[in-house]
Image (cartoon, rainbow, N blue to C red; front, side, top):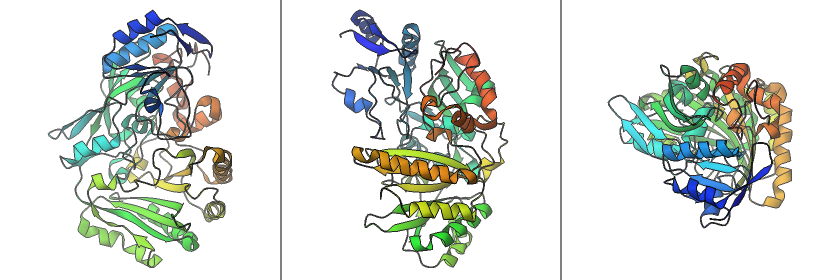
Length: 472
């Protein structure tokens, strides 16, 4: 193995001697990949093909000992570090240019305890892995809406999903986590052990260490009634107004989403997604108001298992396309916001781009704002603006479309943004970081100062420590 030039925390570069790299590699179970190594390109690739960042080395960890060694190596040599879990996000913060990636994607085991209705998963597991295992026992927890999403990233940022109405966010179901902190220690965070760290992990993203395992509360989940009803774009105003009323009056058993998109034949449509987590016989009564919208172009609403529900949106945002996204939290959906949204979507720059309202859910809204680091409990929806395209040369105009629409909708938002949809602090700025963490920001700064005072874990939606940090 040759010597390697690696970017440091200050942005400078340092040579790491071949003997030093060899000694580090020999101490690991998993491989270390450099840009000239076979397998590097596959390991570097993310869900979002717009991200072309090239780290100097990717450490593919097999277990906690590998993570410990990697954190110690990075700290000792003051290397720029990124942490990769599922690798499924818009901004691509799980890669760092010229630095070192601590890659958990080989750590995917999930163990279910049906007696206690809990499950523990490794930090690289995706929701598809998790749901498959819990489904075997008739159990589930809130876990996003895309099986390709990583558990760690979603949960540490909050975690909206189809079961949120009854069971809250993914972070509300996090019972404990094992974390390798910047000082090279393994700490367990729970309600009884390091409780302030546990508080911060539930919404504070990857600021406090590398989460190597997560334990969740599970819930009995049987047959659900779920699917999407699709209507012509010409009826979009009426459909969005209907959705507004539906989301306000939903029982806990029902969670919803609403989307604007373009069909493969070029037809623009509006769709409402539902997931009823209750007796199937009751679903017809709960969904009866849909009849007032008339006959849809298409409906897929039917009884399904939760595992099937988690694949309901497969194909909407496939891996390998290019993405740019921004989001708003919204407490209500005013007529003026509807008009603004529809006017912009009528001029959407890419037929692959999608606009999605995702409902937090009743149980998620009832949690006090200070109970977890995710504090946006006053929001009814997260509005995702997802620019999607395939040709790299087209990126600028599609990104501009998203940014223009986001700016136009600022007056109708709560002022908060979903932290998992935010890029780096250098790209977004301090004001956006504060908006992402809301009223809990200062408490998170104090926690960052305690566990990562020199900001080793900075290639994320970063919270700068109060003092002593090498500033980003």
